Amino acid sequence: MCGIVGYIGFREAWPIVLKGLKRLEYRGYDSAGIALMNNTGQHIYKKAGKVAVLEEFAAAQDKSGTIGIGHTRWATHGAPSDRNSHPHTSNNHKLSIIHNGIIENYATLKEELIERGHEFKSDTDTEVLIHLVEEIQKIEQIDLMEAVRLALQEVSGAYAIVIMDQDNPDRLIAARKGSPMVIGVGAGEYFIASDATPIIEYTKNVIYLKDGEIALITKNDLLIKQLDNVVQTPLIQELELKLEMLEKGGFDHFMLKEIYEQPRSIKDCMRGRIYPQEGKVQLGGIKEFAEKLKNIDRIIIVACGTSWHAGLVGEYLIEEYARIPVEVEYASEFRYRNPIITEKDVVIAISQSGETADTMAAIEMAKERGATIFGICNVAGASIPRLTDAGVYTHAGPEIGVASTKAFTAQVTVLTLMAFYMAQQKGTITTSKLIELLTELDHIPEKVELALESNDLIKEVSEKIKDSTNCLFLGRGTGFPVALEGALKLKEISYIHAEGYPAAEMKHGPIALITEEMPVVFIATQNSSYEKVISNIQEVKARKGKVIAIVTAGDTEVKKMADYCIEIPDANEAFLPLLATIPLQLLSYHIAVMRGCNVDQPRNLAKSVTVE
Ligand code: F6R
Image (cartoon, rainbow, N blue to C red):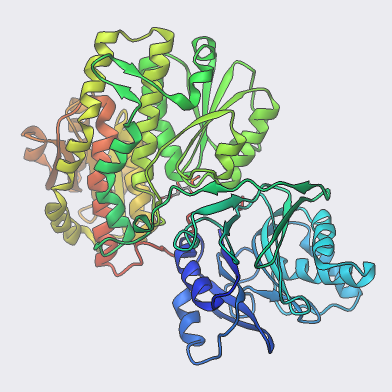
């Protein structure tokens, strides 16, 4: 949440910082601001609204300067407004700061600073931090880096910050704890950002600042220390990211592009990991634990949101094939319970961003209690893969649309591979069965391609139900997490209230909601629960509900009952989520577009939830 960008070098900073903020807007988009330094001093431009509003506001103003910092905000403390937008300044207005995270003890610090004569111009926790830095510098008579280092020892919470100083216009100070930060290394210039997307077009060489590190950056030099003052040798890594991955490539929205990328992303996720002819799965990231997997008592999956839905699919598959008991937990609940965890447990943390605060806290707790932690993550080098003992990347490529699509199917693909891998290790599956399953899995990307061909029909169905105020999604077996995911997609981008339920649970409550006005989306493919789902469809039809059914190609039974049927290719039940999710993503996309919603940046949401 919140995106930060900084630049120091020989080029004009404004266009670099502004473009960087547009790339990071998926992290927060309720207000934005930029501070620039030039020979007349420090100049701050900030506005509530999107980065485009800031751009327009500053259009006619002088924006010269080769040092700059910028921020796009997702409000935590203080409503989205001009005054609460970052950068914030110190009491003497000489220092400015951008911040991603939360300063938890800001209220106490603020009171003390007010007693010392500080006047605050915003309601934010961030402003308190920059006043604190100024106060420490004044009292201790020390340089800025040292003052920042000492100030950070007084704060609790999470932060990625960049500070600019009018009295030292040749430097930036950056630091992080619990929020991500990448430093791009150029020739005579440095770039700082929450992730690598604002940096990629200028340099491929980056340093991932580690938790508890602070950096002094001038255009030709970089000094990194730990908060305990020990100097660090920076590790420069090469980015694998490509610029085209960050562009819409002819699609109207990132979400649509990402939906259409799924045949490719699922394939990338399986590449080098499945050997259908030999009936073998190889997961290099967890192979060190291959022996341990033979004797584990239990798997606990922790995640949030869509990643949690992927976890539910994982539960079905791991229990079915590897016969290991699985529990799927919301990370936010798990971390505050007192769960029973032993050294024989494996915790699998799933996160697209690799930065979700609750998931990270759940990992830390499970780690302290001795469990082995695996991660399933999309963003290479993010915090979660660094915290875990081992893991498997999803390789879906950058996901820019706030609503998760290709990351979900990639997570499900990894969990499917993990289920087969564990089954292989434990001997709960025969090689011939694995040959059969992997041969089919290998062709799933082509089937996803076929599922995407229903786009025009889905658009027509969307037109019919776009004005609904409520919608129910029902499924059984692995169709249940798919239903949950379909409901989440619809509500988050179109703002239609939607619920996902196990189809059989409908009669224990939700059935009361069914009227002619109520669309009910069924996952009604031909699998072990097909007949039961048909009965549930009849129950809805008997109450005049409008049924939209996701069916297996060639289905005739459901077609007799449903108002609209959308076909997906036939597949083994294990692979149903990878196919049935596709039409639901397209349905929510088209409905949201028809309702005039901002599909890529739905209101109140952020892609990376770094606050609990
Ligand atoms: C919904 C969505 C969110 C995320 C959740 C966890 O479309 O994207 O529900 O799944 O915020 O995020 P990660 O996976 O980054 O931990």
